[in-house]
Amino acid sequence: MAKAKAKVSYVCQNCGYVTASWLGKCPECGTWNSFAEQFETKVKEQGYVHFNESSKPKTVSSVAAKPVRRMETGIHEFDRVLGGGIVPGSLVLLSGDPGIGKSTILLDAAMRFSQKQIKVLYVSGEESEEQTAMRANRLGSCTDSLLIMTASEIGNILGSCTDSLLIMTASEIGNILLQAEHEKPGLLVIDSIQTMYTGDLETAAGSVGQVRECTARLLKYAKTSGTAVLIIGHMTKDGNIAGPRLLEHMVDVVLQFEGDRSYAYRVLRALKNRFGSTEECGIFSMEQGGLTEVPNPAGLFLESREQEVSGAVIGGCLEGNRPVMVEFQALAARTPYGMPRRTAVGFDYNRVNMLIAVLERRMGLDFGTYDAYVNVVGGIRVNEPAADLPVLMALFSSYRNRAVVAGTMIFGEVGLTGEVRRVPAMERRIMDAGKLGFERFVVPDAKLRLPEDFKGKVIRVKTVEEAIHAVFG
Image 1 (cartoon, one colour):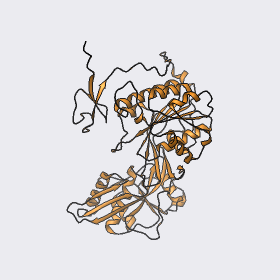
Image 2: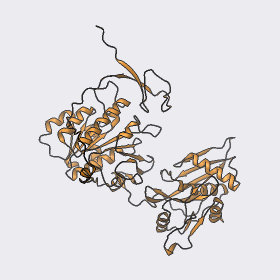
Image 3: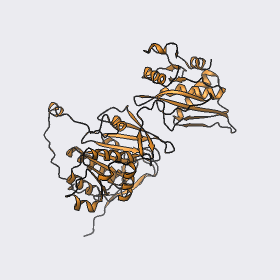
Image 4: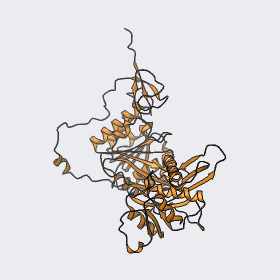
């Protein structure tokens, strides 16, 4: 009898769309040349861990009566973003660009947990034992109790091992979960999910099917065992998490590390959090010994100058729920080409074009023969609307070659009609700027509850024209 031919399908490596034949463009996400061949095989019964799943429903009151205590990592900025710590039984995804510090912060958290006698299993599919030891020694804490072993050696040492931190180098998800079921750690760290695979699928590690299946098994293990699982995910060149979009829906928390490797500062944000707020953020500084927390980042991105210069404006922004004073720089220069250039670093390019259009329409400026460049100092990226007014002021300052008076802080959202709209937490922005020595505040027109010390220092404006008149006279 002839052997049955294996069924072949084509899967988009960006969104997971499946088709019976190869397509040049994915009809789901619009990505070109993203389809990869995949042999459909029946997934074997998951025998690496035997779970006793209960199908009997429970009342909300009986479940809510059991308080869940979060596990604090000891890294206060990390705990702040998580909402107070890691929830047992949760699946957390940490993503970021290469070299941003994902492995560093999770290894640091694992070492801190081991100091509290919480057993941690750290699995690396990218580094050898020697490389992991080198990184652990650089971090500098709990290296004496660090046990490093391969997947084949771990079984011989399990009986006599008393250390709280176990590290293994492996990529097969079934073997990893066998060791996790045997060890019963309080925390499981996977570095990274793109290097994991299961032998039940014939595709390569990092493909859509492998990432989806490995994540599903880790999710099932976390929910049934009560072990918190932290996984690292790589980013694509487009700034998205590598793998299927379904990955972000499966996990409980999605964290993203942002920053430029050329700068020391990193920002940790929560893009999704089922157990806390997504408004918080953590700020770190990459030092020789690893990531260092920055608990008070209000004036972190400011540079002192001996004299005032045109095109530089200080804006009051929010990073999470914390005010941060950010310096915006703009340069308007005559273009030698027929088409003027527009460049934005750390700020939305489309909003720069919108603000230039507002200046041309409402203030009569002609940027048709000028190149316009906008930069946010310090490598930070600002996304909130409160940055509109300081960016507009920086463009006007550079165009007219007029400097903003030192000690002035500006914020506000700019509409297409030229109005300046109010933004959240205005009092907090002003008071934090006052602590840093700012004495003049140009803000949207709104009722503010401020101490008497700020009387006469706050200038409320309704339109762009009023703001420019208040700043430049």
